[in-house]
Structures are given as C-alpha cells and as structure tokens.
Figure 1 (cartoon, rainbow, N blue to C red):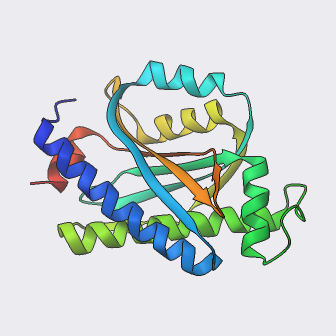
Figure 2: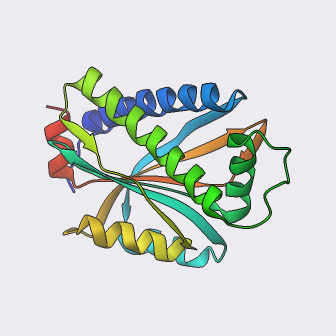
Length: 195
C-alpha cells in the first residue's frame, strides 16, 4: 500500500469532516450530547489488527455498511452489547438501564446508527470531494470482535497485507462508550478519491 504523507493528510481531513457531520446529526436525533471523534488514521498490518480483535473477547453488536461508487469502501462500527443497550434506551427515550437484553429494538437502533453514519459520511465525501458514493443497506451483527473484523476483511477481498484503518472514540451523555469504527479500502480506491 503506497499512500504518500500528503495523501494521508487529505484522507484524514475527509474522515474528520465526515465523522463531525455524523456526530452532529446523532446529537440532534438523540437530543443529547453525542460526540464521535477521530482517534487516528493509519496503515496497519492486517495480521496485527486481526490478532488485536481476536484478543477482545467481549460480545459485540455491530453494523457493516458497504459503499459503492468511484471510492467504494466498507465501514464497520461495533461496540459491546451493553453499549448497544444504552443506545437503545436513548433512541427509545427510556430511562437508562431499561434495556437489559438484545432484542429487535436493539437491532433496529444499531441499524439506524449505521444509516446515520453511512449517510453523513457519504454526503460529506460527495459534497466536499466530488465523489460518487452510495451506501448500501446496513447489516447488523452480534458476535465477537474478531469474527466481525474477519468478516470486514473477507468482504473487502483484501489483496494486500496492509489495511487503511480509521479509529474513533464515541462519547454519549458524557460517558465514553468503548467502540470500534473502521473504514477499509484499498489504496487504489483512495487514490481515486483524492486526485
């Protein structure tokens, strides 16, 4: 994967703009303080990241969104099941702690979160970078971090042992929810986006 330092800066700017817009939209919908912030953008060795995910033995709820267009890539957002219960209560305007088990409501909330993230990320890239980008319907999963990450990698059809990843922090109601938000794309795709 050959991405120059200048291109990495452009990719980071794209990511920050997209995530900032998704964060503001989520705050409006939830009517509470919700902030998604970019932690880091980096090129990683696929095996190292896979090992890290396999070592996280918590049960997770996640959503994967496939983007089609001239800069097609994939998004994977996942958080521990307990974090998805907190989000369910916020979306349904219930007192915190009401949701105690995974249900169709939890699945719907995570799917809606995937829609929010995907639509605002694609809108930012289309309007600011003249990209052609269309998010496909999100797919919700409940499994371990390593399994969901393996699905991301397999679906991306990685031809390289390097992967561009963007990690974020997700804070809601002044509580940080431990989560992962990954974007994956090959460097050929990214080069098209930043020409």
